[in-house]
Amino acid sequence: MTTIDTTALHADYRRVAATGVSSAFGTFGELLQGVLPETDGDFLVTLPVARWAVARFEVDPHTEALEVWPPHKKKALRLTSMIMDDARRPAGGVLRIDSSLPEGKGLASSSADLVATARAVANALEEPMPPRRIESYLARIEPTDGVLYPSVVAFHHRSVRLRARLGSLPSMAVVSVDEGGAVDTVDFNNIPKPFTAADKREYVRLLDRITGAVARQDLAETGAVATASARMNQVLRHKWSLEPMIAICREAGGLGVVVGHSGTTLGILLDTSAPHFHSRLTAAAQACQELVGNVTVYRTLSFH
Image 1 (cartoon, one colour):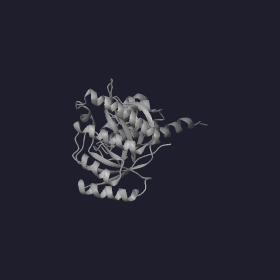
Image 2: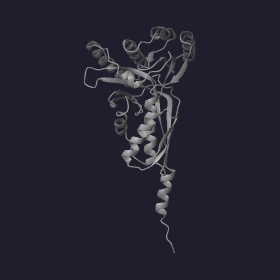
Image 3: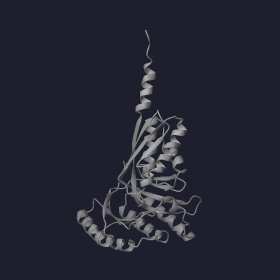
Image 4: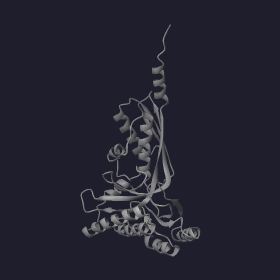
């Protein structure tokens, strides 16, 4: 009687059917972004929002070809190939990315794609994929936002390195406008930074302020730091609607204005637990519509 090796059959089935799925949230610009007076001083502080990229990777052991859908997600395809090579898996597969984050706007769409991809491929291959390993891959591809961590974080985006976990903030609404166009992250980060030594010292103070604000759950101080950072970034990427948006924020009783420092978006921060929140939201949205002509409302993420 012939004995069938069911272990081998099951292993082969897993190789054929192996699928990994994962996700990563985006951010609404940055609460703070600038340069500190130290080596590797470029940094940002994240503002996670309830928009996600979802990646699904299906392994195909019958080919070594890798595909990605949509086809323009070439960075995610490159990342998949890097992980497959390191895992020494002689197989191909199909990566599919579904994202609710608009591209080129400063909402960490590319970072979310890549983090979701790394996790999905690792899940399919049953490979460990801790944050530091993801950072090591992403550092070889492009400057990256700190969306690996379920927290507000200070992050060195050019070297792709965590600086500090700051904690979580209460939920806020972001009444957003888009000045139009798109910004390439790699090109933007190649622009020489015009910040002076005094500017760098101010970024140290702002980082201390936002660190304390997150620890205290102080939304007013958070908004003040975001507005200050948006103003300092004007010398690097000017936004014509910033001062009018700050005026609308003040009139509507908002907390401050946050921007995509390397993008095209601006948003008014509103405390969702404040009295008359809905009327403030309506007033801010109407004024933003009149100013720019487009409005989107986001919600920030809180973590436990």
